Image (cartoon, rainbow, N blue to C red; front, side, top):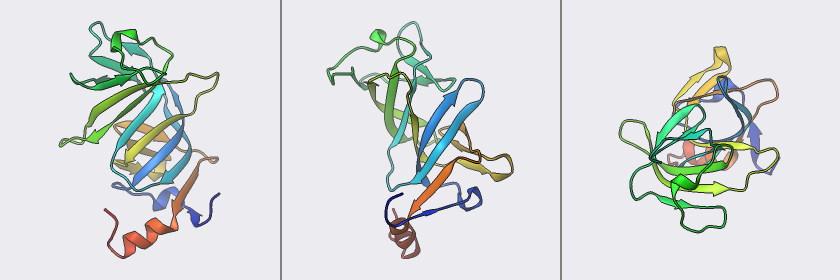
Length: 169
């Protein structure tokens, strides 16, 4: 653990906090968080294994949800070269980047194919939408995220300071 970080319990996690969640998505079960780390930022990121591509390539299925890919969205392959969505195949590690839309939806701006390994750590980054401590769950991008006894929640003390002085975002 780096200098200046402290552990949190799920009771200290609230909607509106910006976090990076590392873990593994399990189809039909949700995203199991290994580590949740508070960060400063506003960009939303989903990095997960591709489950499917619709017929015309305008939607990608990750984390048991279909994500609309807008026209003109930047798409790059593993080598960083421009590519087409129709080149994608289920099982590839895909990174979606974007912003929170006006209706709390994920507005995707970039798609990138990542190197797919034997075991991939998947990632969510964005603003927590809901917290259900009684169920060990929170929601980010509409995706249920589950915590267990091994999940670590970290918060940098710089964020604490900025929040108490009113300088965070």
